[in-house]
Image (cartoon, rainbow, N blue to C red; front, side, top):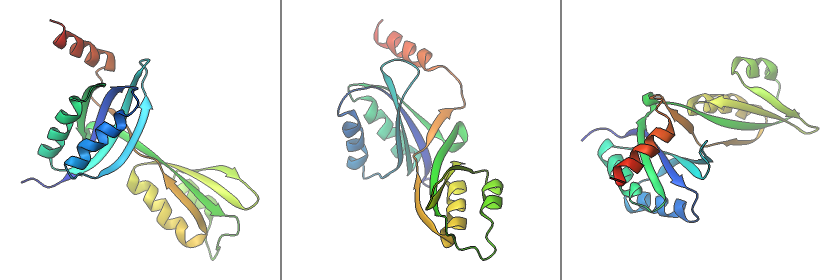
Length: 179
């Protein structure tokens, strides 16, 4: 049996109420935890994409994808390894303006970590970092001992490296079911 690894499922759907619930039930039945979930509209009106990250073995992910494709309102499920996609997450960090200095240079850290300041308020500084999970966690590790008030990270957003347009995939599905 192969080792579990991260897989990203791009689930192309209609915008139907309750669809996310049906999709999450598939993972629950297979006793599979979702590591990250992001929903977004696509460039095609009425078509949405769920980006779901799981850590599992390939066979299980393939079975889950096939089950999700059977749900009414789901057009297609694409399964990718991290090497087959371009992906990012966004993280926000709220730092106290009275951070523990002891040699800590916030401006230098922000530059070195390729982050940016979104807002400077009376009591806090809001910082944004875009990158992979390990990159946002690295900045978290650096900021935490110096007055970090709050941290939040988005789910993964991803796009496949094989750049076949979504319209082509949907047209192929139409052709497949309309002989």
